[in-house]
Amino acid sequence: VKVLKTLGLSGLPVASLAKERRSKRTTERVFLPGRRNPLALAQDTSESLYLQRIRDEAHRFAIGYHRELRRKDAMKTGLEDVPGIGKKRQQALLDRFRTLKKIRAASTDELSEVIGENLARRLQDALKKRPAKKI
Image (cartoon, rainbow, N blue to C red; front, side, top):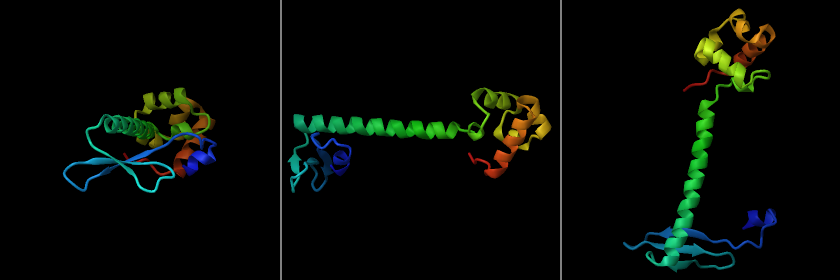
C-alpha cells in the first residue's frame, strides 16, 4: 500500500492472499488495507477459486519474466559491453573463433583480421579487466 501511495495510485483497490494450512482443509485468507484481521474464504467457493486464479496468473507472469532475464544473462558473452562491438562484430568474432575462450586467447593480430587493430586492442584490454565467465 505504501508503494502505491508513493506512485500516486492510492485509490486502487488492493488485497493480498495467503494460504492457511492449520487443518486438513486449506482456506485462503484475504488481507485488506485498513482491516486488522483477514477474511477467511473456504477452499471451493467461486470467490476463492477466482482469487486463486488471479494469484496463480501473477505468479506465472513473474516466474516467466525472471526466467527470461536469466536466459538473456546466460546468453551474454561480455563482448557486447565493449564500445564498438555490436551484434555484427560479435557474431563475426564468434564465427571466426567459435568460443569466448578462443577469443580471449587470440592475439591482437588474429583479432584485427576480424575487427581491425584499434578495436582488437580495446577488446583485449576489456577482456583482461574482467574475469572469464564460468558456465
